[in-house]
Image (tube, rainbow, N blue to C red):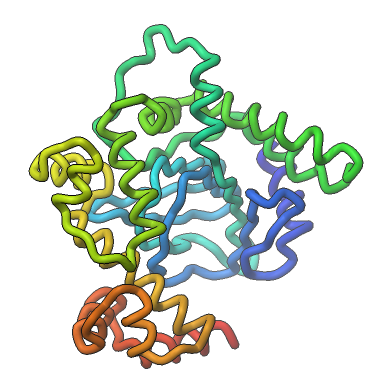
Length: 294
């Protein structure tokens, strides 16, 4: 089944890069060589390494997944990811399906989980071997491009099947944590959603803790448990990554990017950017543009 899915991805990813499919939530990837770590934000979703290997680093924790293994991310987290095994003869092929928390919540409400109530301690990511049932559902989702007259009706059903299969797999407790009403994980997940939309605003940790109905010390503890970094580090990562994308894609200058993402001091922005990405902003963006040309 994995080989059939690889062939379906090959038909879309005809060169190195990221490729959209006929399903808006589904992307496929190809890389012909190992890559350097790239900072990015992983959202709630399912990633599968079909051929080759990939590493994702969250805080001090590393997650490696290889041929046929899947990684589920249960909350939005800033990570560094890179391909660790790929070649021209054996490229890395992978896919990513964005998941919806409301859909997961609705499906969880319809299911019974007798004897499955042990939850990991606020883990944001999990890696497991992918079973053939899940691979088959993903293959059928990709192949809907061949049946455009049925896609609108079948795609929601297959995506529901995929979530059902994930909730009946070792990924289940990681996903169920985000929809457990009143759980610490759910409260932190809501905070992360708010921060993703409001990271340019000025706010205090006490404000975030109050909104999460926690004391500041408890909030910091649970936040670090889930995200593997402090709230201030998380916001800084969001701002720096957003600024990088602005400079790269919209070609705005360093000072304007700093102000746009919430920094009051361009010099402080440049210092923190250099510490985070390893190069000053101008040199980093120039190097990224050269990579795009190559």
